[in-house]
Length: 241
Image (cartoon, rainbow, N blue to C red; front, side):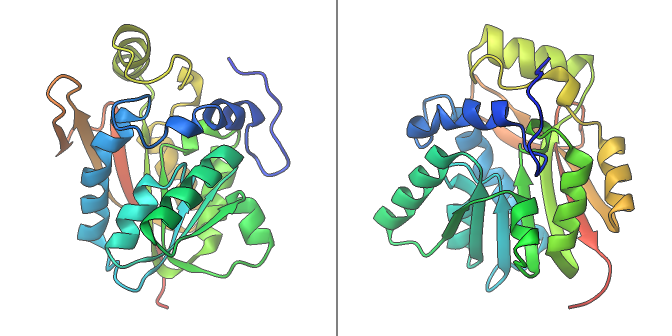
């Protein structure tokens, strides 16, 4: 179990350092982030099916090197991407600049953005990030506060059960080497019921929940009814803009 103390904004310094060290290889589709490259089209499609992206003011929390941010920008969203790993933000900015993409990348947490009076967003995405912070319930609360009334929050994370431990940690990290060992800690994985409870406390409604299945041998990724391992949640804030 990670014993690193949480920072003032709820982030985990150990987790930040872990991903910062891998930043230079983020855009290698065959490297440590291969699963993200495989998942990205399905996630992007799921988001596009639930909200209007063209012209939407969108915040990508834990944006990493910008994989999802660039896809959502291509769909017409006005994207702000935030991450606490300086190497990731540098990679994201360089990749966007090379492609001529107007994406606003900032080295910041959601809490820092909210404290700075960032205003409200139409859509917020938080992919594979909640299980890497020290206080996920607090982060959900902050994301809700950053969302405009009627806005949508999309979260992807890993379920916490024996099956997800065997497949996502033992299998993916230690047997197949799909992702670096130590990427996930079982105790930090999040059950859908926990996410739904935090969302209700933050004034959000769980609108839809779906699983994602990834076959590492064929490269096939598909939406599934099975939320036992990796799942996507669509949450909304009550009210109208």
